[in-house]
Length: 338
Image 1: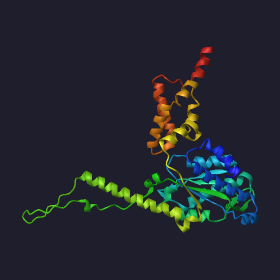
Image 2 (image 1 turned 180 degrees about the vertical axis):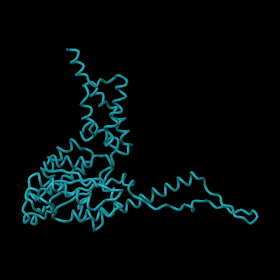
Image 3 (image 1 turned 135 degrees about the horizontal axis):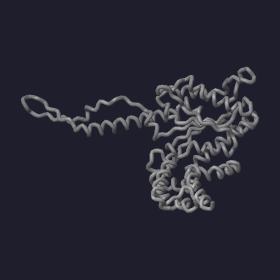
Image 4 (image 1 turned 30 degrees about the vertical axis):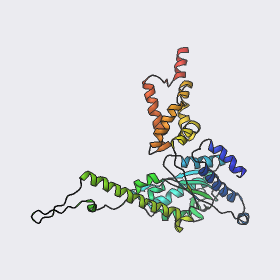
């Protein structure tokens, strides 16, 4: 492992221990792009260095964006998040381009250098799976330059955006909410029994509840297949491959991993929340049984680590109601002394 990569890994891992391999790959790509940015084009060609954008794929709430942000922080390079704005559930092309223009302008104004570098995370790409926004995204990222107007110079400036590390983020478990499928005709689920009764055919239809369950199962299956096809398009199609050259799949996060993160990492915000309490209460929140229970709760939660603050506040509320936690021990002590 390269010494620089090793040093950055050691720093970031303290905060983001949820997936060692993913962290290693993210650092390697961002470092590669930084080396290209700092080197001469001829040297880059001789060394065979090529720019890499990244597509990260994993469950919502496990800290993918935080991991990328921490890497950028340790490397002391600009970091921005790009949200997909929608109007009436549709991605508006002008709004999409305008959002990118705002970020590029902020990056330029930092040091008035038209050759930009840094990291932009394009969040929740699953929200645009049913739109043509991927084509627009391709059109922006694939170009090496972007024009903006400089208010100070009173003229247009051409920005070099080829050194920016674009990180696309996809959440498979959340993407189901943004995939639509046609209505299903489930008449084939009905059972037909033919009985001789005055030459009439009687059809026995399954119970309505069973039909609903069957229909939901079919729709979920169709959504999953459609979703797989759409994400496969982002990951493997010729159109998108040159946009995101490296694809990183995050491991599923389990109870034991969550427990380690709660105890050892600030990514969960758990330590930060607990640090506002007194010493005894601080130790209580790192009790092994409590961490076991909280980790189990979060492992089953749709939002995973994203839900830590709300879970913590609920436990805290119960403990305070029972009178077992004093939120203001120092302030009350000062009042007594006075």
